[in-house]
Amino acid sequence: MDITANMVKELRDKTGAGMMDCKKALTATEGDMAKAIDWLREKGIAKAEKKASRIAAEGLADIAVSGDKAVVFEVNCETDFVAHGDKFAAFVAKIGAAIVASNAESNEAALEVAYNGKTIREFLLENVAVIGENITLRNVTVFHKTADQHFGVYKHMGGKIVTLTILNGGSDEAAKDVAMHACAMNPRYLAPADIPADVIAHERQVLQAEALNENAANPKPKPEQIIVKMVEGRLLKGLKENCLINQPFVKNPDQSVDEYVRSKGASIVSFNRLAMGEGIEKKVENFAEEVMSQIK
Image (tube, rainbow, N blue to C red):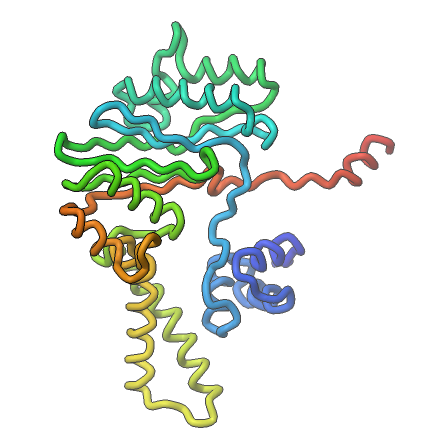
């Protein structure tokens, strides 16, 4: 398989490794990006995926709340200029209000929700003509809470990242503090018990290969049982760092998020963090090439 410059660049963006190392990794794994990331980590060249998810599309993520119901969603457009306009923010808010007032529980169902005599799908198409850009609705997720639970809502930079938390007990303020923390620290899981077994097994395998490679290069190799303990220590540390309840609380790093929440007489039910445009690759424009193509 031919390894292209774009593939090398993508791997470098995700791992921070050098260009030649990225090319070697892709060659060794026949162009498989995920396996190439593991290859670099096993060699000790890349310790982690620094940019596992490219956030490239424009638009806004938002959260609409009505009573004991909340909807997390995003609306994407083509340019940052449109996304930063007041009209677009108002447009997104209207969509959120319509969805949270409906019975829709999915993205597809949300597109069929009625709004001012038309569906949201038709409303989007209508505004495509007005705004002059393609507009899409993505990642609609609905949350429900009980009367004694609290929603925490936090929006970063007006909608670049939004987080929603649900607390048992406590207060809206405490729930918002946890939402702010989740926005800043980007935990992948709520607690260690939520981490899938296959994720743990995969991480253990990668860390073990990395440790064995390090040990082989050591002038004084450590016994195998020491390597096993070392791997488990690294594994537990890494998993802990990815769990919301275990992370040092951003407002007071001397206590964990769980300790902060318990001090408020509460516990965390769930959280959701949505980064605008995550998973969408933005088209890279080369202005010089575009001009040349017009004059040929």
